[in-house]
Image 1: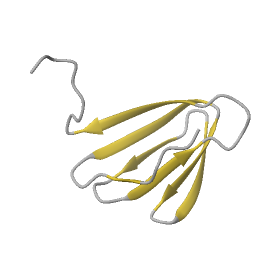
Image 2: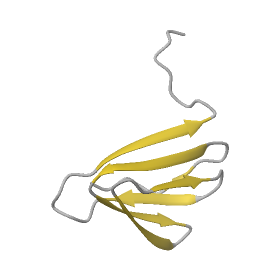
Image 3: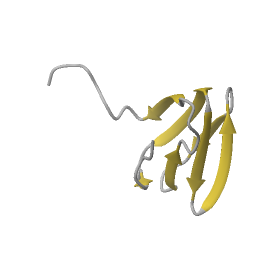
Length: 73
């Protein structure tokens, strides 16, 4: 699994690893995250998360302010 580089100009993103191991690149620096690790990214951070193993990666991402909604417009 590979998520393209992302820059969120107004959002804070919180990543929590539920299962597996993730490689998270933040502003060009690689961080390894394992089960129960978490990290908070501030607006403007260039980031990309990857699963470089053959095991499943399950993670929770919370963004603030709200960026997706299931409410009808």
